[in-house]
Image 1 (cartoon, rainbow, N blue to C red):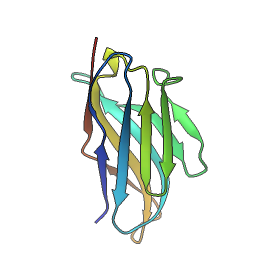
Image 2: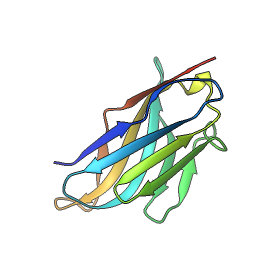
Image 3: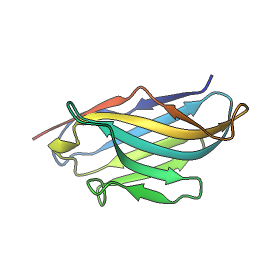
Image 4: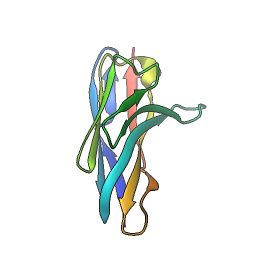
Length: 118
């Protein structure tokens, strides 16, 4: 069974840093893309950053210059610097994975909470 597990969330003060980790496990043949989304209370889930198989990255405007997405094998990372209170949210890992059943299927993790205080 394929699963994504996030870690690295926590509570920090404004200006601080966190590194989120997304570990994909199971019968995975490859990672087509990996992304981080976030959802703040009362808001819709929004994409923060994405990295494709070729290594191309895409960032939300709010993340540009502060966040860096990367991937190594089946593990993804989101380095977050200069955090702001408005970054407070539950962060979800999303991955499009090639498995024995599909050339590309979408998976979600359960999320990790990030709280930034002013």
